Image (cartoon, rainbow, N blue to C red; front, side):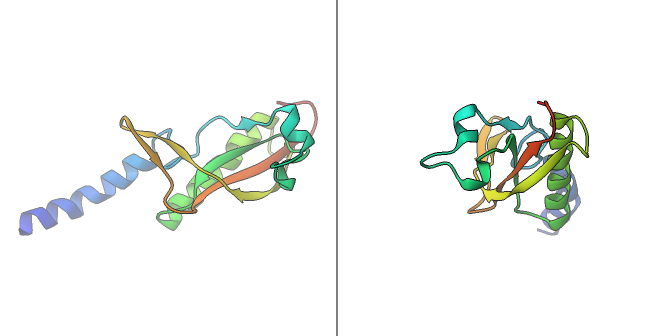
Length: 128
């Protein structure tokens, strides 16, 4: 019994670190941004007002350890800066709830409850 407890305590940091380093949007926001099409940018029925005129969004999962959530959010901003051509080349329109799904080791996963977020952004200039 004590062996199982010790093994769990010793392996937990590696499991958490392994999840944080994947290219899965549930655990890590290092994914390509979703660029809105012309219809979404124009708006209309069912399109959230925050999306109208925006360039796109990057999704991440806001659940888990606070340090991991902060790292995912920071990576999402890095992805936005890369898509727009620099840190001073975009504006953030806001965040909205969204699904953040992916697969982890061949299993489909998604954020727990309402913890999926989409950072909606607009590029300044001609990119992306």
